[in-house]
Image (cartoon, rainbow, N blue to C red):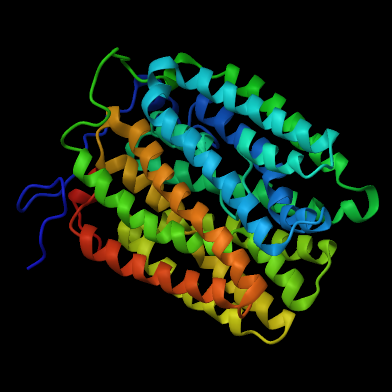
Length: 430
């Protein structure tokens, strides 16, 4: 007999009540394109696209840019680790203070830190500029976004759509992000013709646009109450979030070995590909990933959120290991595209699942703490990957990532298969 996951009572599904605000219910009650999500949700989607275009080209060029500045493979890993750790620190802090000082205000602040990071990269080619930019900003140098934006927007999105459209909201959110990121990756070939400064200038401008868009959000994005003193997490949500955080740590530690900058550098070392070719490859991978979100929500409706998370993720990790053993760039890219067509289908399902099984008042903390755990553990891996690329077989980071992620899939299914969100409780997935 399966044991009950933490935070559940014997024989009962653990699920938080779903009580979206009136403005969200009104928005999704109408029919027509775009009416399933309210104005705040649309602003978040717009800002997501503005923010992730530069993240797309930074993920491709950053490792190569650092190498051209004279950084060794191990030093590149250290810089990427510092970049991820800074995002983890910011995410951890906002988990406890964002609802108190205001979500809008917090988002505007972090949009301006992206402006600062872009400015540092634009004005200097000294070694300290990319290091400080990574620490000061919220630069995403992996295939998927991490950091405070992600955590806060995850907490806000369920308030912009009805419960039965929550997973759709997260699917579109990720579709927009990866679609914009793929467009950004396509720009990674520009330095060959115009140098790096125009891209860094675009990163600066995106931060300013983000600050304006976040300032335009309504008061509906804020929590319904902001008590001066309250427990960081309710007793009911605490054990669930602790178990999720531990499991997500395993997945993220594996993911840190294959951040987009690491993968880009791997293809650069293994096959000698230039930035223009790398940009085209990662444009294709991001585009395939974005398209996968079109079916992710439908799969989740048929088989459930947790099964979607696990059953799409496992084969993607087998394809990832295949990339390491590919002997030609064409074969490696084929396996990578197969991997990307499945690997991120779990993301909207995971985000929706976490928001569904914790209390509404715990959503910011839940998103922040699980994201912090993922970010901290993923920050350890890039330096190890850099060491492996410099001293061991080049395929070590990819194989290690695949094995760790397969272990995560098995563990999370074992621990949470009895924990269903509200919309799945009436009818169990077949």
